[in-house]
Image 1 (cartoon, rainbow, N blue to C red):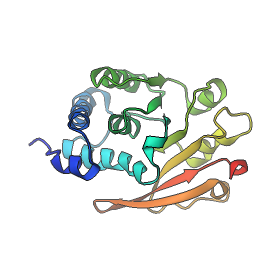
Image 2 (cartoon, rainbow, N blue to C red):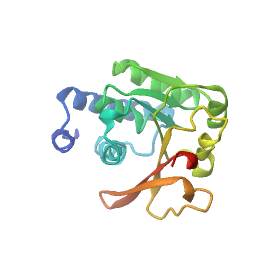
Image 3 (cartoon, rainbow, N blue to C red):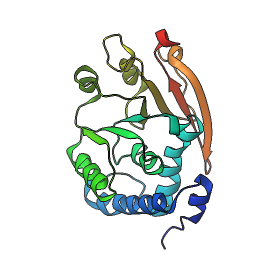
Image 4 (tube, rainbow, N blue to C red):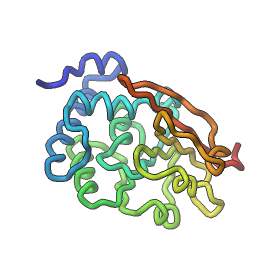
Length: 207
C-alpha cells in the first residue's frame, strides 16, 4: 500500500510540488536499492518517517530560509540534503560521496527531480578539505564519519573553518574532551519511539 503523504504535507506545511518530489524520491530509493544497496530502510512509509522526518529536524535548529548552502558529508542516498533541497529549493548543495554507485544514484535523482545548484563530489572528507573551496554555510553529517574526523574542517588551513557543522547524534552519544569545546547547541528530538540529538558545532576561535 502506498504511503499517504497528506499528514506529512500538513505537518511541514509543504507545497504539493514538494510532496510529489519527496514521494518520487522515496520510490527511487526503493527501486534503486535492489541493485545499489542504498539503505536498510526500504518501505515508503519508513523512508518518510525515518529518513525524511529526520532530515527535516534541522529546520527546528535553523531558519533554513536564511541559509544559502549545505554540504552533506558521506551523503549516501542523499539524506539529509536532498529532502531539505526539495523543501527549501533555494538551497545550493554540495553532496560528498566516495562510492561511485551511490554517486550514480545521486545524479539520477538530481536529474529526475529537476534539482538545480547541486554539486556531487567524489572526494573523501580529508581530500575535500585539502582541495576544494566551495561556499558552504552548514555541513551536515548523518551516519557518516565520527566527530573526531568531522572537526578537521575547523583547522586554520581549512577553507571551511568558519562554516557550521551539524552532527546527527544517537541518544546515548557523549562527546569526549576533544569534541566538547566545539559544541554550540544541542537539539534533542524524537521520531516515533527513537530519540536523537542534533549537535551544532563551530570553530572554537569563532565562538
